[in-house]
Length: 308
Image (tube, rainbow, N blue to C red; front, side, top):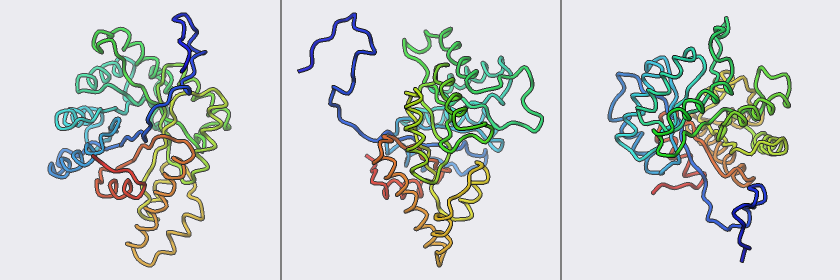
């Protein structure tokens, strides 16, 4: 039996490892707001399929084709009305100046959001205007300030704030240590969790996790998993994210004798990646669905995760 702790005991003396608790894999999904002319039945099926897994949250991106953040807010309203899923909205510094960002945060909260993924966003060629927030940690602080000012809206709760992290390093970082410094700055600013950029080798994530913990990062580092359905798609995603696809992965996919075999090889590689990092202590998965429920279900089946 554990000794009773004094109410005045410092929090850093409390070890949560002493408590035996049932564990399960934390699961979340990323979806893209549909175009205004999207097939409603297909979107309903997507949401129903994802909802059946009772995910911990569903992250909603923004895109030009769906009206940027207004499309995000409208899709979140739909998710909240039709499902049990808890929406988390992507919000980038590129969405506007400080006052515009505050307006968007309020609009998203009115839509049903209780979590935000704070990003810098892709820079335009000329860079961000000088009066915009320049980095994601500044956006995290703005969200926390607004949360404090509107505390009554959350019934004594708070917004969940996520950020991005990069197992293979950010393209603009001088070195790996700078990446960890940036992640620590986001954590100090009030981030609750970080979701990784794509990676293709489980060791990339596991090494990153170990180094981040040694550097003092204690927030969850949630691995983002993209189904590898074809070599062409994989190369395209590697180009967009600035990552080099490992030659061993290219060789395996290139050896396929048909599109069906290529799909099967890619999905099994993805499942192996997920199973390996879970065995290594990841504890969570964030699935990039690309709004495809069938591929998402197939991947989770291969990993061994079932729905209700």
